[in-house]
Length: 507
Image (cartoon, rainbow, N blue to C red; front, top):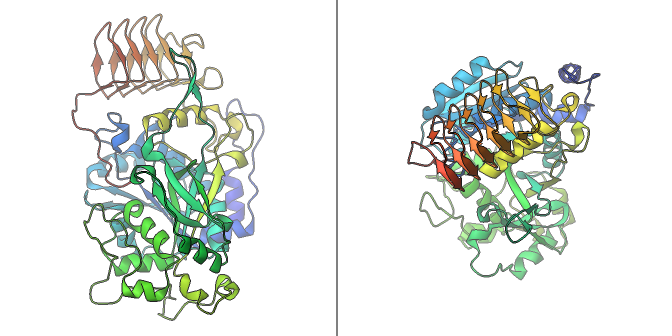
């Protein structure tokens, strides 16, 4: 019945300009992995790197191809067989998210969970577990500003196949794109805070994961780590990579939920839990119990040692729900030494996928996208609009009119909206574009006004903002409702009535 329901969800996605129906093949194994997994969407952060676009609102509600990103994500999860999802937000955004849910049309059951603004991501998952709401054998955690499609099944499959405690979806970044400049074309550099050194062994087991900003001069890998990697059956080689982006989409085992329940010091999934799991997975039980194992960084809590549950010892190995020791594993059986099993206290893996190719046809090539920076927000809009209507993962792009392969103009938008003056740009509903204005590689949100003969390039104009006549904005961000005076020329600036930037509270 579940297979039939999933097939029905993707039938007839042609829409206007489509042509024929579209059907995803769904196997029984895929359905089984979904039904055994609880899904949690985290939508409680505005994101400091998206200022001023998310001032006073969560980044999950930013428009992607004129549709809130959260709506696209929910539709993707529903189409992939999830029948319910827990949507976690904060008190600050309760009203906005509730309003969105009122307008959202979908069959998936959405349970809104509202936490205090100071609650971290690990706290949010812990609360759901303690309230006995996470019934599955594992939990899928996704940021609300992500869109995932077929990769969610690959992620769940790998998590189950490798008997993992943590499985992270990582995207392989393509070679840097060339950007035009006064001194010729030069590659665009990734933001330093997006770059990590990730060490992968066989089956992409994560051996280490360290941000570039945390490496002073060189990255040192202890020889003992390589030796222990070999003893667990993961091979003797570790490949250090810096071209992977962590999407923050991950799967946690039931044992990790029990670990969170045992220790309240874990606040953030990204800053506390993930580093702890990766660093402890190849430490022997004797080292872990004696405190010799590397401690997790406590950037927020200030603690300097491994978490210890108050009043009871922290479980050093995964246990069944009844407290019994875990069943023997394949890697334990393969261990060449008698103490091999003691070296493996948990298991962390990555699913590495390539970036989506907008020119490729077919939903199987659709990849995870995440809008957590200005650049990725622009890029995500461009890639979503590029998908042919019949093959778009969320069905027809009915919220506007296409102008070429990479541009979309919303309903009731007036003015000069032709391919000549709107290039690789998404324009929201109810906008006004003045005569002679040119929009290039930009996003203009609903209700905005662009003055005559103005140039907006590689920029984002917020809801209801006004750009005066003969302005020239390059690499700029204009906050909601802000008015840019006539004749303004700016590059790389942010315009907002709010002097405070968004806070990266969660991710």
